[in-house]
Amino acid sequence: MMKKIIYAVFAMLIFASCEKPNKIGFVDNGTIINDYQEKKDLEAKFQIKEEAYRNKFDSIDQAFQMEVQKFQSEAQRMSQNKAQQKYQELGQKKQIQDQQKQVEAQAFQQAFQSELDSIINKVKKFENEYGKTNGYTYILGTSDAQATVLFGAEENDLTQTILDALNAEYEKK
Image 1 (cartoon, rainbow, N blue to C red):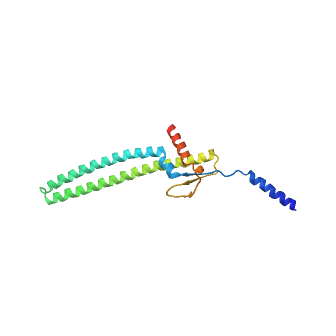
Image 2: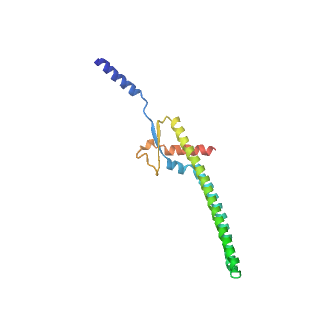
Image 3: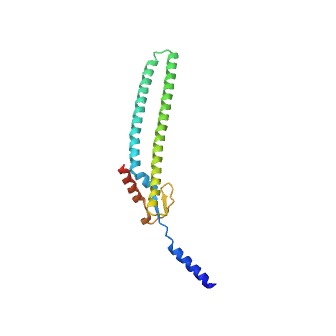
């Protein structure tokens, strides 16, 4: 009976020693996303669009201000009813302009967020494929917003390696 137990323990030790060790790495997703060239290009593209948006509405606001000033100088020569009517028209026009600004700002923000989400998904997929291709059992993610890796040995930090590979792939396109 004792021989069987010793053989069983010996067999378990052999099987345990044959088991492949887990290969674990981690990445700082905040760094990868923020330093990924495609994200930087997206931000630059939207910064140009944002500047055009601001210029458009600045010129609309300036034209409206000129119209208000013209009304103020002419209001004294108008009848009270006519001045009141013009004042209400200007108020309505300002409301419409403000609503248009808000709608365009929301559409702008949604478009940016949609493209950013697409980039984030692309990064996640790349990290997943990188892990499979390079034999990792786990690749853990962390960021400033959510510190899930409290400590990791420097040799297990894949942040720069994955960032370099992502940027190289992006430059090919």
